Length: 518
Image (cartoon, rainbow, N blue to C red; front, side):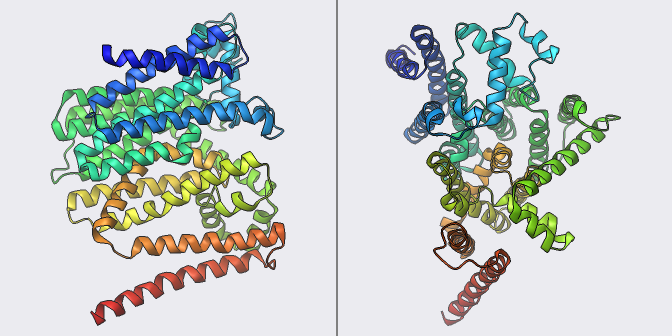
């Protein structure tokens, strides 16, 4: 620890001073607050790095994750007021509307005469649906930055907490499946653009991802080693999820229940495990329903509250989507009603659409951010699709069931959030990234399996995706820049579908022909 502090303290002081320069408030107070947060974060990260095995690769991944998120947070806070859009949140240096509302409410609560709890109960500060992150932010501002509003404090915490997820997932994947899964999964967690963007903002998702990674390690430690400490990590992670988002806590419990059930021949749940899961599920359902009941039409029971809320939210998002896009209105008018839901789900899965972000006329900073987010999703998407095939072909029946379960839950979640958030370019990917630890594991397994098997399905999926990007890039070029002839959107959609079938079927036939010749 002494040797660590010899470099941590100067690094924290230097980084804190550099960040304070970009904040217009009083320099000394900001410098001390930023330096303290960075020092505590570095202590936690280095301790977890040693605990996870002290690997050089792991250290590089953690360091890169922290640096990318900190630099992005400073850059966006500084550049958005100058080069961003005309929206109020952009002029204040926020990329997300939710983070702008929550953070400003947290600052208003921190400087008010209310206690934090009384302020939340009063209803005057409603920027956070569940209240957990706003409570944490208000406490931070009240005790670390009482003289001025310094949004970078919460950004620094989000960046550091986002990186904390990496050693937990690394150690869990290494114990359960080996480093061939742990290394690519950790890289995905560190450099996935949507995760970097959320980790550089005052959002819940970095904290949710960290708590999910913590529960994954706790589960694996208990399941593989039968260590009681695993229960402590698991319980701590679930408690954190309940505070930030009861719905995500319930989702995590569903994933772990299936993981346990499909992992062995016994498929037996002990009494204490059943009681513990039941208590958490009941608490989570009532917490979620109590939060949502104020905005729903039916509050007779928790199930009605949750289902009514989901229906109303999906209906509202569909209304916003159709009102904001004449193209969507046109397509819903042309398509038969049975095809509306599949079209909207597919449209949501494609968001953020890469050709749209590359070619739609907009300001430079929005185009750069949107293109990087889309590139990250379009790079991960083929691996998530191929992950289902890799899971099905897994030679170990236990592992096959577990990976198929992961793939099933991940894709059900992706479709649900696509319907829930429509084709929203911000909420849809934000909800989707909540499951990033499991997505990273499935993608890492898919990549590892393909490197060993070298079958043709991953290249086929990638080829179909590339053809989609190329053809719709031509459509956007024709629509906005008139570089190519402008054809009907449905003609492009039908051509894409036909081209995808030709690519897959042609390669299957070619592969069979080559096999018969050999």
